[in-house]
Image (cartoon, rainbow, N blue to C red; front, top):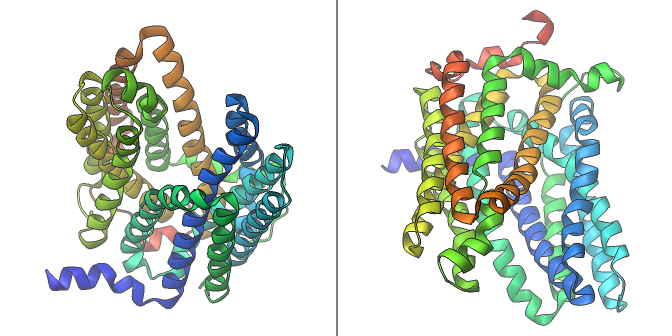
Length: 418
């Protein structure tokens, strides 16, 4: 057991990875705290539900427009520098929000303008962050690095809103001030991070080069199957958007119960990723991936059918756990299968699929709930996820039968050599 624990944390001996991971945790904490403050502040200023929806749109629209170009940038320039610039942009956003608050802002359009800048920085940061891990750690430590990075991310996602809510008791200015401090520390840590083997391909940004990642994904059944499985599984099984109504109308619980429901999937994902850091999946990779998605779908069905709060929490915990297994395997497959020269663009395509599944999944859940009712929508969503899992198992036999991850040597080839 002691050797297992030592191996799980051994990747933290890599100073560059430790610096990057610390910067990622601090940055995620800051972003989560800031999102809580923005939501409360905007609603207090306007009392408009439409304006709350505009918060998400202001961040998602620039992300969707810029993400493919951002993937190209991640392959053309130093990925550490890109992440550093994005953190600086986020720091600027936090500082502007603090300045607006201190000046006694009464209109919300400046906040939305800041969020457009934030969404733009997020677009460039996501593919660079996904692609940089292979430049930070040796291949033999990559699976541990992915698991620790995922676990730390989910812990930050869980703690961030709680800390933001507590700090908001002192006003939004307190939240934005702490956000600025955390992002400043993240910037300092990224300046101390060095990468090995940065991208050196310098082709111009043409339509052909921008779509290189999409062509690569389409040409690789393993990558296409893994990414599209996650897309449709989350699209049909996304119950998060319905949790407020589910808590009130089905479980008959209040805000505290809703908070527990929202936290449960993150706890399941975080604990599972920690387990994967110490006991990484090495065999029957395809079956583990399909099993994780099937667990996600089956748990959604049971959650939708129950009116018992503890059972619902357990099912949400299992949903987060199953999703984490799928995410872990998909991330490793994409990174191992992809040449470094186009890893940023492929990561951008992956980010588009993830973003689309989350956003469209919430929309789909709302539509089906309006058509069929709340409980039928939840159950049907889980059943649809299980159906997709079965179809993908037969449609992508190379993924279903994959026993081990691709060899490290294969990940460094250029697409032209295939």
